Length: 82
Image 1: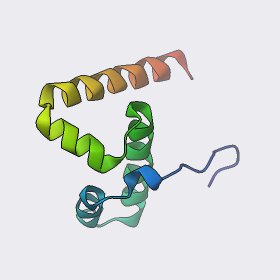
Image 2: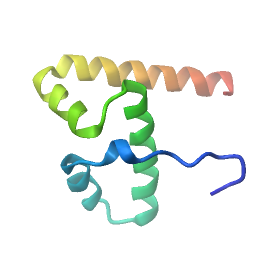
Image 3: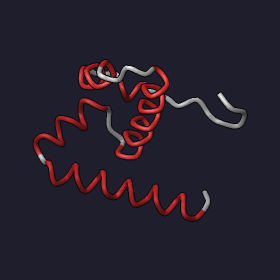
């Protein structure tokens, strides 16, 4: 891990939904990148993975809004140089 980067807490990824998702990714490097990015998103929505998926199934428009808002926030953040 590069100097100055914090270790990502991946406990939000514990769940059966993540297991299936991660098993489909062959590259270990890609798997780790996806895990960190997904954990960052789950921290943003303040939910664990299985809770998010369950709510997303019940309310797809809610999930779409959360994902869109997160992506726009990330886009703004990178444009500002944060």
